[in-house]
Image (cartoon, rainbow, N blue to C red; front, side, top):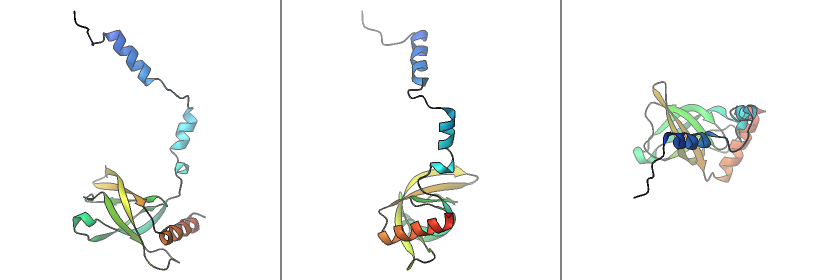
Length: 140
């Protein structure tokens, strides 16, 4: 007789219940706190910047969105084709336009548009210093 690998109803329920159990006891307050804006390593501020998709013709588009030390978020009517985008912005007090590249880490449909989240990659030192100062001035 061959071995049977199917589970009866009780065994299936027991496995499902075990998977649903919490492995780490965490209070509801702690989980709720993680969802607040304070969970971020860097504050976000509203800003105007340009984004260019080199894989799709290379035309820069200007957006109003949120900028943090790690990246940027903005809404577009048509999502970018590429995974790596060029990012630039003017910051008061910086010696010129700040430029870097960012990797698309999220695309989500929202109210007829697409929300795009970039994570900056290998920021030039001057970009990092100027952006850090700009965020500090804007958030107090």
